[in-house]
Image 1 (cartoon, rainbow, N blue to C red):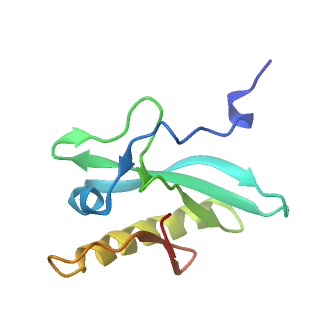
Image 2 (cartoon, rainbow, N blue to C red; image 1 turned 90 degrees about the horizontal axis):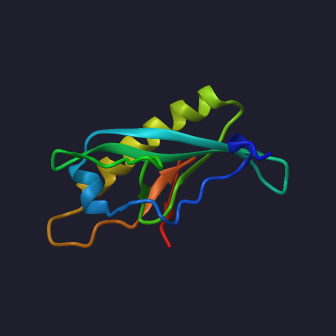
Length: 120
């Protein structure tokens, strides 16, 4: 028997928002996806993005969207602390994209754990 909670979601088939789409997102929210323990034994909390883009909900039955194909990964002592960090990081990331001067390519990355991480 498989338990859904013990299986990591596959994000390859999720909708991926571009930085420009993220800037236009109404009511952006970070969606908790799952808790992961890495090979070093550190706990990480994995999030995607939800909200409304041009009047349409961006999430579907699979869950939230990635940003440029990436999920938001937060290392924290507990889930509540991770929730606080990811909400601030998402807001700061959107502000960073919006601050990009008109005509320039938007930054390609997200703010996680207090630092800017480039997208691949």
